[in-house]
Image (tube, rainbow, N blue to C red; front, side, top):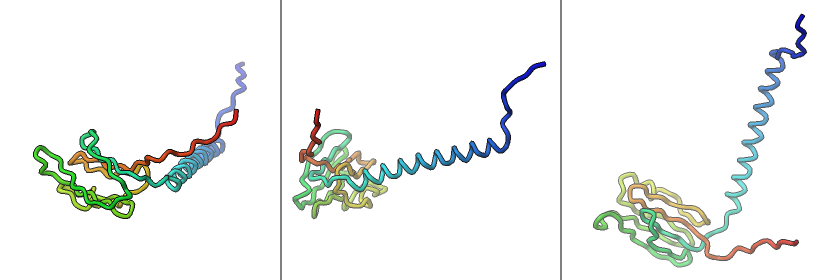
Length: 139
């Protein structure tokens, strides 16, 4: 006689296991959402805008100075994105690209925010040049 002490799972234990999986996944999603919200709400405002074209640095502009900057790209500069910096924010007012997604983007002003024009390979990113206070470490 073969006596095996293992028990077969029942429908009841399978339901409990499924419920626990759902609770675990929901808790993980809540933690990720809270962390994302924390990062989003506590980002620092930037003070410069860095423009890159095709991965190469093009120019750096201050967000504290109102200006209009035409960004010419393409073989003979026939493609254009018009960058507007006003009141500490930057946005693309006009673009000659076919989709115009970059011109529809909301103004950016916080560190790490960016506007991308894929057809022209233009990336406009907000940076902060001020030194952040490092936390004191007691040893």
